[in-house]
Length: 60
Image (cartoon, rainbow, N blue to C red; front, side, top):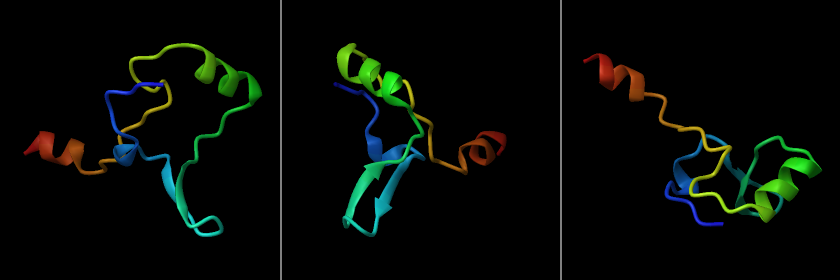
């Protein structure tokens, strides 16, 4: 799956202390996962910007 937005900027990209690696922590079921793996997306359909200050910078 090719994405134009890197996972590092997604709010669902979390560090898992048990496996000691970063993982996607989006809550999806088997159907969502199957669709994500079988279809070709230009961007991740679950991507949500993790930049909490984006709105504040826009207001300045």
